[in-house]
Picture 1: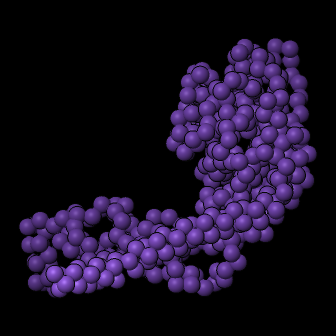
Picture 2: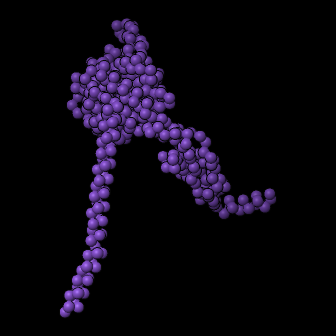
Length: 412
């Protein structure tokens, strides 16, 4: 009996030694993980606090984005849906440029103003029913003078009705990932449910200025006259840019202002300095002065914090061997230029790049197939990569292709 009791006590002691440390270690690990998560959260909160202290924005919603990479540099309540006023017209102009690119309209096309378009009110250029203006002039009226009547005239010209145009606006917004946006009209007049967010405005602004940089030719016009030709005769009308940054801020490149009773004062301000293009969005500022002051603070903050590395050079490897193809090689191209935005003050001259690609590619090869990558490294860490793609098709070789090659080799 004593032996059995001693054996049981010994086993209990052994089990205690084996399992207790594991339990204690598990609890310690869990505690360390919790502390790590807490410290990471605290670090993020501290970083955000420092950021907000560095950029004192008075408006309730704002965001700063770098255009080429889409990197968000600063944000403040950027996802709250708010009325955007005439900043809506960024999407309207985007759809106009889409139509120009598609060839469905041309800049010299004559657009006739309907009675409905002429009745818009608000900011307008006083187009009269039946009056015609070119697409080019309509774009100037929208970009410079924020003309509500010109917006509706263009919407009807492109889609037949404003309703269909607005449907396409929302469709385009979905495609850009604008999750907090719902357009009711094409000009931004206050309407129930017509909302977007600072982040969404930045997304559509980025699409407009990167895909159609010629928008700056319109948004940077300070003053220009247009001519009204109506049944009452011919008259000149002066356009003056609603975006005062065009004259007041040396790095300004656009883009669009907006203000209504519900939206208060909004702006999507773009600027460029040393090859870096930024988008500063401000929503619901109390007055026009605060709106522009906040935008300038954001832009200056971004220009002081950012440096951009770009690479559009020809790849080191310009062709790849093809196994079993009608051709022995295929040309290699980069799919896109590479951009990297640094906000830490790193030495961009130390960025290295290396090529990763299979030694032989098996046929068939299709133009655009990914054959490898250029990998970019900074301090030994990957900061991004760009694809290397096939420049043309290479079909798989058949019997007669191999026979032809054999004959050619025999007579060499």
